Image 1 (tube, one colour):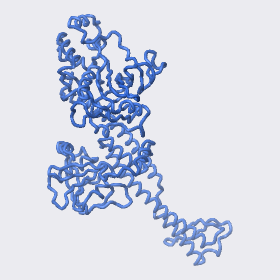
Image 2 (cartoon, helix red, strand yellow; image 1 turned 90 degrees about the horizontal axis):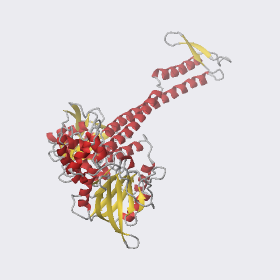
Image 3 (tube, rainbow, N blue to C red; image 1 turned 60 degrees about the vertical axis):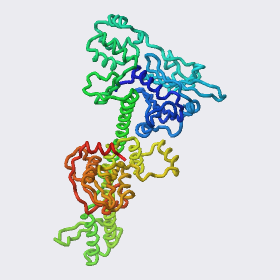
Image 4 (cartoon, rainbow, N blue to C red; image 1 turned 180 degrees about the vertical axis):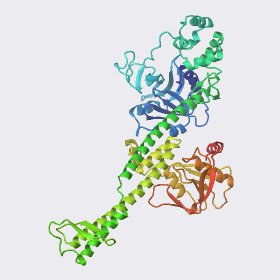
Length: 592
């Protein structure tokens, strides 16, 4: 993943300054260890809802960007159940503060947000939120500019951690030390640039030499500039001057989403996607990568839990000791034979003391039939002993059948959850699925989740469409798709009317799909689109000619005391469908 270099940060700061100058902070949030959110209002006109400043301090890929509140639901982690001390301090000083300037340190990956506010005494103060986006040294420092005193720091740095620069509340603020030997491009004429290149060691690659001697230029940006220069040092100098001036930039992302550039060209990329601004580039590239990474990690965590549960289920299934009808019949027949022998006087009135086995003859062929007995009990009591064994065996057989039925239902439910987790698209969907897995007893609730549940209990009304994706067909009919087991359950129960139509892939894990048609007939095109959605949100997503069953909702019934989404149906018809990605994309883009 490409890092946010100082030049890109400089261009971003220029755009942020134009968008946020004189805007005020209305909200400060610290949802997870590496994430901070500042919500702005007022100031210069901005695109609709572009008011959330997102700060990511992860050492692997630190960045900041002005984005929309939707990222709060789709990407941001919610690790803290209540505001942290750092969050409360930032709220105290920044809420209501006016953002007067956004700037960077020359040649450094440091972005400073300069605020003006009033202190407790009503006196004006100048506060700086300094974002140092420098890999493993990434940090956020909040200091009073007039006094030069640090008020708070995201990650404290003690004397043992760094002999050059300590960072802690109450210490004097000092900017990060400048790297020795690096020069700013703005200070170099072409003669100076040519002289610099003349000192390049013969065995050192040109781009690595420039990266080590020019401040602010990442290796990827140098690659793009050198590719466009086509071997000309003069052209390369012009490209680097264009980048350093952050004027007339053309931000682009490679077609595979792995690289970005500011010159309208990316080295070795067959296709580039233009972005309307550097902020839009950072939003699409970094938030896109962050979202994909978090979704993948969350997916892997939940799939691991489901895999562990399935192994437990299989182990319990193997431990079931089946009881055959022959064994039950044998116990019953043995008891009958003892009673008949006693009635026919084939045996003495009482068992012989010390006798543990009596040999009788079979009813059918007259062959010897040795039967174990208790010499301390009479013949009736011995017969009753075998009857009790038959009864217990029958009870064990019934319990084993019930347990096997439950394990089979659990297998189907786990397969359904596996498919839903594999195809979940947002963190909110993962939260819903995790809550279902906790409710089913498959995993234990985290302390944070329990705290959130306790906090929200009795204050939030359950949304009946939670876990349900709402789309619109090309004919204007509403199509509902279950994105969780509870969502599937809601489609079958609360959300369906008797004349609506229900669809599902045949005998495979998948989402329930509902066409809200009422009493009107369903157009063939809508039925086909709904069937494609049923296949797309199933384990047969990449298959062809998939059978999809459909029937009126009045013929679909949830199976009592079964897992969510488990239904019986009748009067069904079958449609064979091969999903078309263009149709699916059109339906998803036009979602309701």
